[in-house]
Length: 166
Image 1 (cartoon, rainbow, N blue to C red):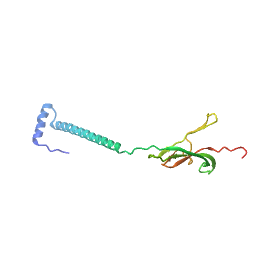
Image 2: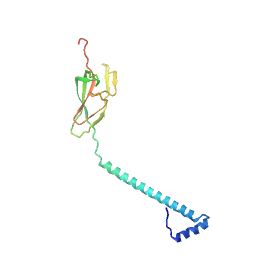
Image 3: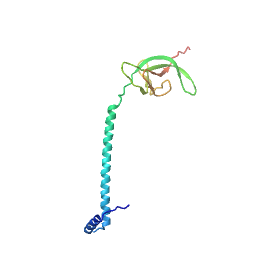
Image 4: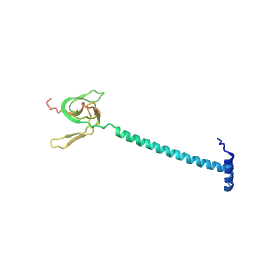
């Protein structure tokens, strides 16, 4: 790459080179590289400053325009006896108490209950812990489910107590 310089500029560099002891071509090369490096550093700093300004403006604009997240309204609905299917391959089922938990509609707007986990604790008559299941399985054999507004999820709690006579 070549740069066309006027004869006056070349003469100026020759005079400067005589005072420094360097060849004038080397002096022109050094001054040109330093100038280019300073220009590129200033340009990069300006670009970074503009990018940070735009990022901050974007963040402030999105923070004010976000839709508020409404919490779910999970409530216990009922307990009933029903069949709960075991493993998908075997197809076995068993009678169990099932708890229905609903995301209840109310007077205010509610959100979807995402990735709900249930933790079951079985107690004896003296309220001592017999067994703790973390997380319990929902009726779909999943460890967590999502419940939309107005819908419910079914949690298989325990097998039916049968007497020895049956």
